[in-house]
Length: 126
Image 1: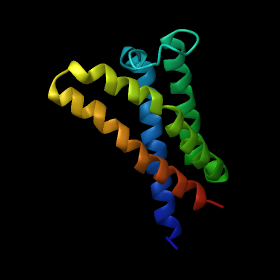
Image 2 (image 1 turned 30 degrees about the vertical axis):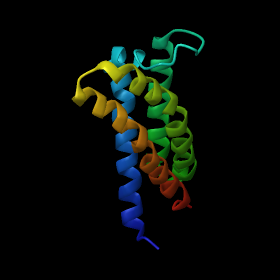
Image 3 (image 1 turned 180 degrees about the vertical axis):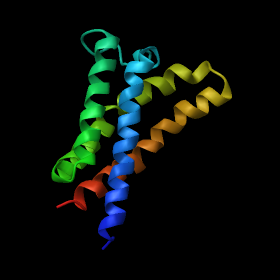
């Protein structure tokens, strides 16, 4: 079993990633607006802000030892829930520069280790 300190560092790193991502939904909302699937009800900006709030809330839950397990499972759900936006981004970026396409396409398989990391945080927390 992984030492407690290492598990805590992993959880705090995940919380930092989620917190940074959540904050960028408010500091650079146009970027996120563009990848919101248009089939969702409401405006893209509403979804951008709602997902930013969700990421910040999940970050806080993962960062707090008492809520870390629940936060880890919430992070798993969040990473799965945002996958359609990553698919939309990849489709929208088909005609962009090779660098932009690489970033967009790279987001798709990146969800797998993010889900695994969040699952590990959840399962490793009391």
